[in-house]
Image 1 (cartoon, rainbow, N blue to C red):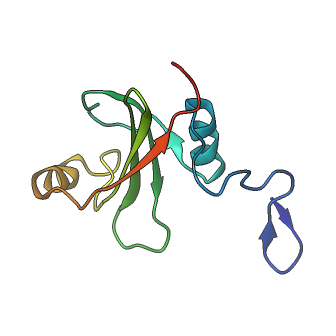
Image 2: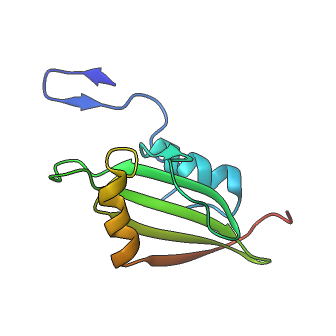
Length: 115
């Protein structure tokens, strides 16, 4: 980041994709470029091949945006939801998220690779 006196701007590559591409390397780059961390503390679900998390700025508490990636024969399924409590900050609070299950959004991205 470069400080220009009016805030900060990103130098170099800025968001090559407007939506995740159809391969795991591209999906990984998509989320990492947007400030997500890979493999946050969590229990993996069946079929899950990757996971990303990012704190939600300005939110009170310890909420985070959580992404799980699953692979089917033709698609990558991107399961997104908001945890009210980040398990790395409050495991007891996150237990409430598990019990009350936040609303999930599923996006299908057609695979562009054969693995």
